[in-house]
Length: 124
Image (cartoon, rainbow, N blue to C red; front, side, top):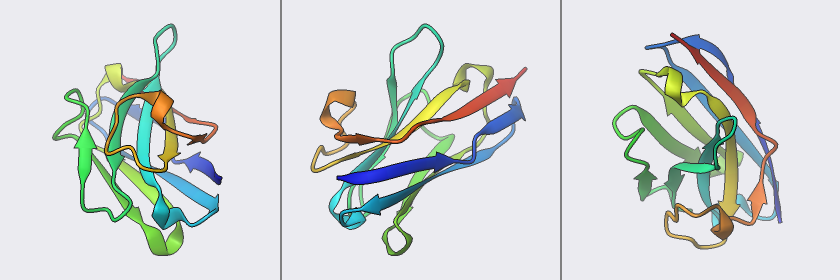
């Protein structure tokens, strides 16, 4: 399986931007579809974005469409989440996850490997 480590979280004012990174090690990164999820206190983990193994296909939750962009660079085993126009409701722990072939699935159950998460806090 692939091991994942997120970074890039922090505190930002509403309207600001952050870029999250997820570094992968282990089995060939380019064979995995990748996703970003988030979990706010007292809420279930929710889908944010996903990208196909080739990087051609991108999928977004309606709540972040037009504000967030997922990308990947297979040569450096990293997936990114560029977050712009951040809102207080984006505050959560953000996790990256890998799946063998899930076609942009929104279900956490489809994903086999998870990082430890990185905190994003957006102040109003």
